Length: 281
Image (cartoon, rainbow, N blue to C red):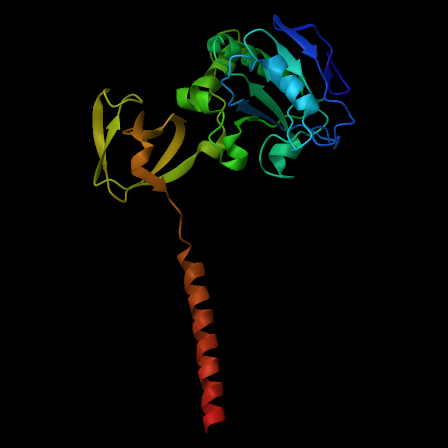
């Protein structure tokens, strides 16, 4: 079904599919660097104009000559278009020659005015599941947001709805709606420190849900997922939520290393003072 990095089908799980490859003469969009794909990076186009569908974005990336930009697939509510072979890299992740650009398949999901967003997202899920079943070089947890590589809040519509919810949708489709353990993107497991004097812990990711307890200022807690600005945490052995605006990243301090560095600086200072005393005497 995939030959030389190109999908050999006219539909993907029922969604119309076609190739519209970036010309090899366009060195900006198609550098033709060989790639072994390990990840699938999800984007929103960020273009809400009425005519900004998959076809328009394909024509754009075919002809762009003033910047390095490209991706592998564009998806809207009507079709899936392939722009690059998945054995060539694209410029979509914002990390230069990092893993995002050099080892991941880029999928752009349209968000133009009038689009059936639910359908567009479903079509993207069908493409993702096809790739999961067909590309054997992908990592164990390969589906990641653009945000992972560059920090950009993208795909913004999916992140607003909840990245975990999107992964669950992928899993449910992949497993015939039987459900499965969520594919966890390890980059979203992190530690946060509470900055508010007292922060409510909620049963659901909204301020009107049940208040199940409080976290105090400077408490450190592990975050296991996110839905918009709400962070999923474990509280009393249950999945609960706190608002991310009242937290900041926790940076673990290696006190032994700090002490060693301090001692080394002190030894250098003592040595310099001794040298100065010899000169003076």
